[in-house]
Length: 115
Length: 112
Image 1 (cartoon, chains in turn green, brown):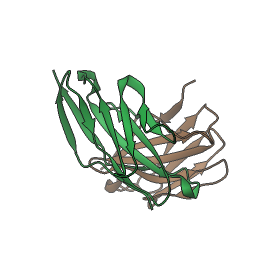
Image 2: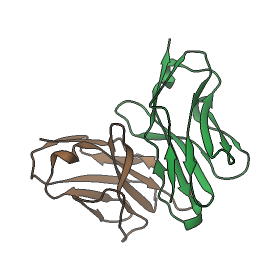
Image 3: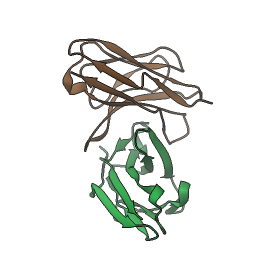
Image 4: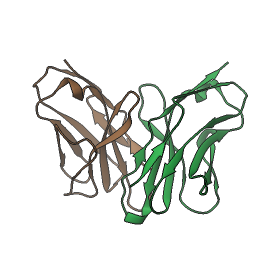
């Protein structure tokens, strides 16, 4: 079984400050991990993924995430937040051991960046 | 490329009415998915199609049916709509060997 948790419903940060959106996962095998962003009244857009290799993954719009196997975490980070980063962020996991293409999504974290 | 397209964008139904949500992708992707998004619930998988000619149930399939008409199109049908099916519905696709999903813009459905 696979699952993902986003422990914060909402994250508030001031523009220019660093931001972190948390994600932890559970899989029986090895994980593929993803972050997606959803702007109001839009579909989800892919931000970045961890498949294998370097634990620090860089993605779109200056976002990055660090895969931590011992803590089963994949937190999303950005060094300097922009007001335009305000959106809903989803973490997703897929257990590659079974060969499935079915990811499990977290409940989402609303990021609010204040001017 | 238009990517993943969905029609309609908005729909209001009365309880018991039926309708079909349409989804098409022009990226030659093999796998397609239907999700519903409800506040605080994230995305829940309704049905998916790993390839043309195959469909499988997801987490919340009750009250829905699907058809993978061809490689491009994957439709979702509500035979007898219920207020509990009020939601935003997203279609997504993925290419075999790739990993990230591409999502459509969504259909906002209200059942009264």
